[in-house]
Image (cartoon, rainbow, N blue to C red; front, side, top):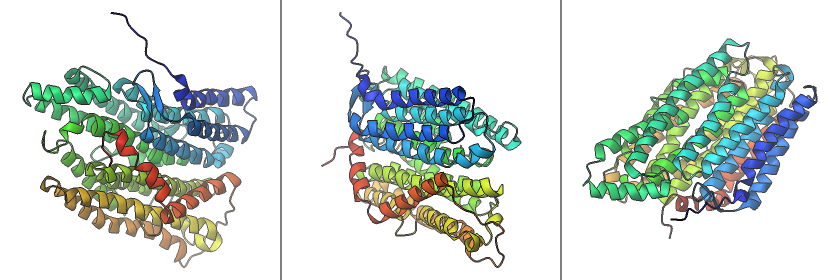
Length: 503
């Protein structure tokens, strides 16, 4: 039998290859100029992201390395999110690199780019091992970035906790993937789906116990990446101790990468085992319970936080609960709503963290009480923060409102199709109720800025990079809240990437 090499088609991987090389250029440039480049190395990193985005537009859809690498609508959509989150994280870091990161600016920016490469590679992976490698390339640079302030005990603690938890979650995920390979005999996700269905029929459903154990391992592994309860304990401490732009990048980029991995493995690879005909809601109800726990725990505990980074950490836990409502809806609108949600979340959350990073750079404080009276001395900064928080709370006409509306609508639509999915009504009810709690702690920050009798001692003026990031966030929140059609039209192609038949 003649062995035929797969078609490599490296052109489809050109954005990832270019950004990887560009990250090396960033480090070399910083070292070559004896670390005296100032902001230039940051602008160089931003330029690389812009060029990568342009290359991505012209790359188009297609396969590479056989079926291992596949540019489809899901991959393209998530790559845009990864590049956007990386751009906003680097743009928020200029104040940080002027004050605290002086001798290692090149490494700092390059590690963000390397992590972005991993996210992009993961979103195009159509095979278990390459997906796992992409996930590790995403997280390993983040371990270093979380502990980048080596003289700060909180930062070192954040890095160590993230490393330990990340290694443990990776072990669980890899163990689950090994079971999938053992049951299906392949690491190709599409072929795995077919082989699992055949194996299930061949053994008359007797692989059910092994499959359920596998699903639990996979949920534990990916649940750590998404900070779904009970796998969320690391998030508040890591967010608080990490450099603020890195906490922002963790909350959006890393979370989006986890969602892409979940969609590829659970939705696409284990599709047949969600259908009630095969095995009634094996992972659907379980994920629904985790989503409900995320919404309740995240929103309730966030109310008690006095540190704004910890508050946003618990907020991100709650937000992933809302996102998973769309994921377990398991219809075309559900998959599209998940994509739109993370897209809208990127602008609001990265924008909020950009304000926090700018405020921290100027004042050295992350306490909510430090924002007292800020609206009087820095009205533009306060207005931007208020808009971002209201979008996270789901207030119209901002993008966050439509994001929640779409995931709730998808769940209600699915619940009305079959009695097996009536539990989704309860999930939507929990989502609506906990949104009220969310409004309370978001509004508390706004009240502190606008309705305090005391005056703020800080009069802050925007720097160009911080203003750019905040304006990008504001434009995204308003534009896609008022005119979501282009993004939803693009997102409507994603279900086809996951095996859904679109009329």
